[in-house]
Amino acid sequence: MAQLFKLVHNVETGVVEEIELTAQEIAEMNDDAGIEAAKAKAEAEKAALLAKLGITADEAKLLLS
Image 1 (cartoon, helix red, strand yellow):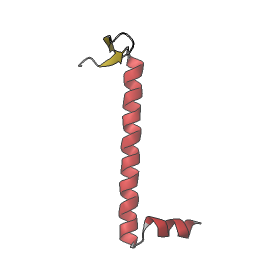
Image 2: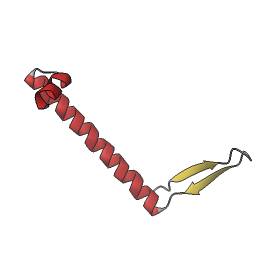
Image 3: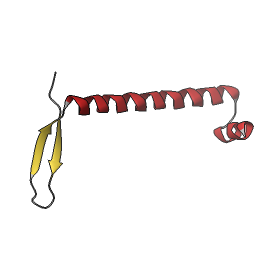
């Protein structure tokens, strides 16, 4: 597996360090990516359903209120 790194830039000194990510940081990145993918999928499904019903998101909100 390729090593992943983060860049840390000290703006006062101008020094840029390349620091290897820990297993915990990689797991957090993967979790965040999975959450974002799930959100995108849910939004796409919602848009498809609204289109199938022939209503807008604003109309759906009115129906739910």
